[in-house]
Image (tube, rainbow, N blue to C red; front, side):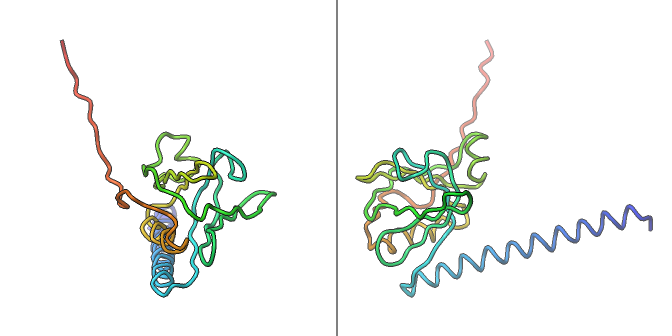
Length: 168
């Protein structure tokens, strides 16, 4: 077998092993958060955040939402100013949607579900990864003492609209 075929085979095998390992790590994290939720223990999940007024960032920033006793807290992952931001103790989920447009998908994640939230402190948006979405919404509802109202369906429906060509 020639050298280049072996190199391609090694790369393919490495990619398969990496994908399997990452899948296992993601599933383990979701199971851990679900178990913590059932047992009433504090939990956390990764989410992107932006808001309309201070103290929330104006642009999408990645961080970790920690839920336990009291208000949910969001801690930025990157940057020089990494102060924790307290999320509102009571809020209402206004809408949910998939990340739209190239700019928003690049700023958050292509598989993010954007949750629009309204509270007395202003409007904010959380970008939650698809695999974490259900446990994150349950955690926000339970971990905030039931102060987060999710009056809408927690599994967003994707509607495909196709334009029809109307030839004259």
